[in-house]
Image (cartoon, rainbow, N blue to C red):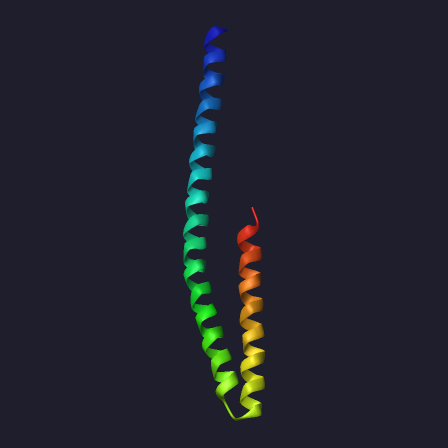
Length: 88
């Protein structure tokens, strides 16, 4: 009877260790994803900034509207990435 309790305890311990390792691996993957996204978001912000500069210095009204539209799309993309990153 005593051996059964030890066996059950060991099985539960192994399951907990496996679950902990899986959670730690998941956390590492999430952190790597966020680091990559952070870099990409900085790049998108730079593109948006240069686009706004182009928008204000350009003479072509059609180009200015195109740049403004694309800036909005980039910012929406950034917001979507942040929303995804906040999910658990």
